[in-house]
Amino acid sequence: MKLNKIMAVAASALLLAACAPSNSSSSSASKTDGSQEASKSESSEIDTSAVKLLTPVGIPTLAFYDQGENKNWTSTANPSDVIAPAWGKDNYDAIVFDGINGLNVAKKNGTKYVLARWISGGTFYVVSTKHDSLDDLKSDSLIYGFNQTGVGSQVFRSLAASEWNIESFSNATYASGVAEVLSTLTNAPTTYDFYVLSQPQLLNAQTALSNKGIELNIISDLQADWAKAHDGCFVPAAALFINKTAYSEKKDLLDAFLAEVDERIENAVDHPETAVEALTDYASRHDDAQARFGYAPSLVASLQTDGKNGFNLQKDGEVDPLKTTNAFQSAIGGAAYDASSFLD
Image 1: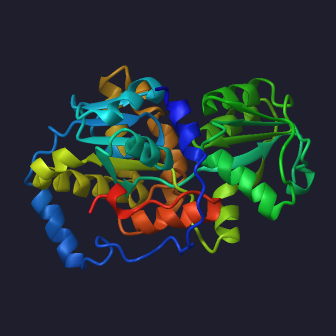
Image 2: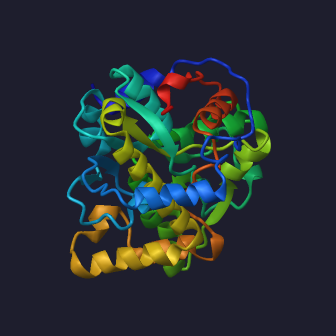
């Protein structure tokens, strides 16, 4: 079954659940600094290169910035063709995907995978070259977004209805991917009144349009507006899923793998020069760096330095996977997930 069809079916199930703040006390967050350091020390003694990993290119690959030469890591620019068939099989130990859709797809395909970590939060923005205020956004505005059933589109429509007094949009068009939105925005920016896109495409659009002398106005940071409207609730994006069978058979290996992912994310947020150096080194020796990761090292430097964390990476312990997910589901009017969908 095609992934977009699976997503559409999953998105149709609606059930309200209680909302909760995004930060809560996960087991990782409750560790003392000493136990965290001990865990890292133990994990460093285990070679995790044998872990079979599948991810899309783009923001999630920053959690694997030093793994470019790892032959057991597959990154793909075509997740619907490559990742969709993987959910019902045991070919991978870990899969990274859009978290909400991944939960729905994994459950529909036999619950082989459970969510272990949120890698990133949303980086969704409403932008325009024709308008400079939310007051200009109307029900009949020409809008170009991507992935109609995706989290970004859902958040945009929900905020419009609850906060901006727009019940629906009569002239909204949705591309299959954000690259199509970026292309139209940079090549024919006045075609639509408003565009919905995400990082790093936002930075690419700003750069391309600036070179043409065109100003791109950020109308809404959807993450900030969502948090303001919903008591600090987190907008989820990419998540790391672990194969339950693999975890039961090689728990120590996968725990070490998860600890390394946590450490890389922490570095990419607090010490992004570490990630930039590793990515630059890989790019200096390989021609496929852009295809492998989905961006150039310079883009990481632009978005991550000085504490900006433009990739919106989530360090372990900042959000509790189950509670954070269900807080979002409650706010968006979606079905709550039970604990069996998450790594214990």
